[in-house]
Amino acid sequence: MSKLTSSSSELDLDRPNIEDYLPPDSIPQPHAKLRLRDLLDISPTLTEAAGAIVDDSFTRCFKSNPPEPWNWNIYLFPLWCLGVVVRYGILFPGRVLVLTIGWIIFLSCYIPVHLLLTGHDKLRKRLERALVELICSFFVASWTGVVKYHGPRPCARPKQVFVANHTSMIDFIVLEQMTAFAVIMQKHPGWVGLLQSTILDSLGCIWFNRSEAKDREIVARKLREHVEGSDNNPLLIFPEGTCVNNQFTVMFKKGAFELGSTVCPIAIKYNKIFVDAFWNSKKQSFTTHLLQLMTSWAVVCDVWYLEPQNMKPGETAIEFAERVRDIISVRAGLKKVPWDGYLKYSRPSPKHRERKQQSFAESVLHRLEEK
Amino acid sequence: MGNTSSMLTQYDIEEVQEHCNNTFSQQEIVSLYQRFCQLDRNSGGFISADEFLSVPEFAVNPLSQRLFRMIDGLNFKEFVLFLSAFSSRATLQHKVEFIFKVYDSDGNGKVAFSDLLDVLRDLTGQFISEQQRELVLTHVLEEAGYKKDSLLVLSDFMKILGNNGLKMEVEIPVD
Image 1 (tube, one colour):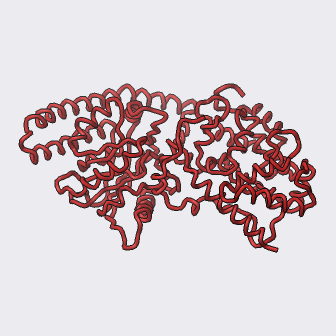
Image 2: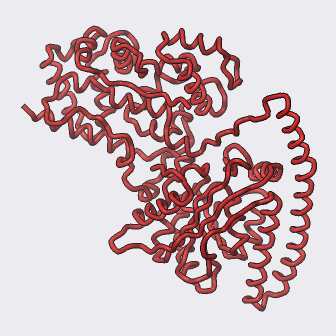
Image 3: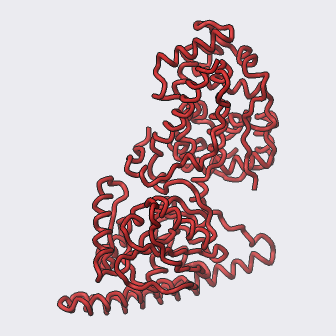
């Protein structure tokens, strides 16, 4: 049937008890004798299934609502046409020019610095960091990005990680223009992958592969090593593990929260009126996504650097992750959803079904004994 | 309904409404259509197994396989008819019929002990042994006046399930 396998048991450890969030099973009242009717009446389970068919909170996270068309009458339509002409004919070429100039400046500085200063590591790293921040600023300018940063700017200290909610790969660029983070990302194909293996590598970025189960341990080790090094760029992690549509947050993976470091939350919220910055990687490639941004009026967003958090005594990594998710969701006005983002790529583990089966079975056996 | 157009005409809506015996309002049908198109990602005109199972809430349901067999390959009109049992306007008779159809997987109008056992197995999994399941079923069947080899028909289901309020309703979100 499907080539996707159900998620490995390792991923289950990332989830707190989903049963707490799912609609409560209206199992027949316990402490009453078991009758034929109770076994035949499967309506609660059927209702849950039908409810999921009709609407479910997981699909809602990845839905991009198309903007309401406003060009529907005789004078608005020409205005809209004028807007299209301006956007595609004037703004877009201008932006491409800005970006090209940016790349020329960047490459003409970066390549010499990278090749010639191999002996002077500290200086080289400082220059590379500044150059990466520069090219990111050019990118942001190429979408007419209006980014408001709130809160104290991140500083590079050891034993510190930054976590943020994830809407698109441009989150990385928006944050990087302010601070040269080392980020942990999925390895991408194409020109993005090329950039990843050359420039971003020198920042100390870490790559992972979602589909490899063993990858997790290797990545966890690399994270720990990076955080402990005093010289490394501050580490940025997107614990959702996937892009979400900036109206919800899915559950945070606990990997970032069990490194024994301070976690600094960052909340990012895009203003949808100007452009919907959600990158639905299944629907469009990153290139198409960038082109869409470059032909819109502007990318407007707010970035909040929030108060650093430490794990409280007696708190598990998962509870810590949920607490930080709460802080970020409240700040950015996002709704929380109890699903693992990786369910986009794999089926839920049979454990959840088994829990339902177990509770029903126990209720049946219990009621059988009632007289 | 056209092939891939995601716009329903008034005629389409009325046709679907008639098909499901007016159990859904026109607004609800439009919402269901949006949902159908959302689930039917490759626009094939029907929702495939993969697409249904990509809804985690549906995939973890113990009866998802049984239900899936009933919805597999349905076009939109049939999809709405399938869901009409869950409308607040559906009659009790309709709801009991739906439950009967879930049990009667071969569609011959009779539910045997093995069908009852199959559904109970789906609901309880490995947490009750097969023997215990048979014992429990035999026990409650005999208590209700049936024998282990009795074949239940729809009227039996109506008798057993029909008196107390059967709650099987789903609200269609209408924006």
